[in-house]
Image 1: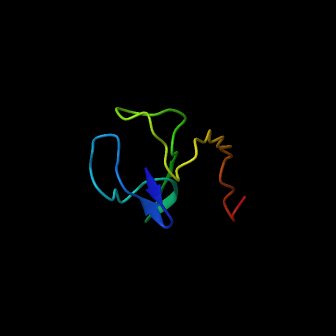
Image 2: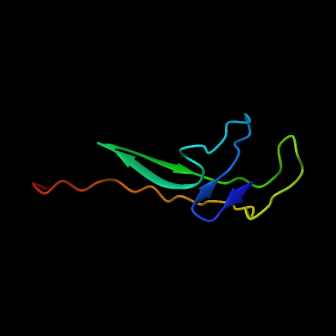
Length: 65
């Protein structure tokens, strides 16, 4: 379930999850979080459309090469 600006409840019933969908970066690490395709315990997707994410990975090119 979502509201404009973020999610309301996560599949583990956590309220207002920090990572509810999108791209996140912390230092040298990056994560892509999908909102998912289905419904969890409650079969309702209110203001939270299903999505399928395709991520293309490519090698990082060093400046010295």
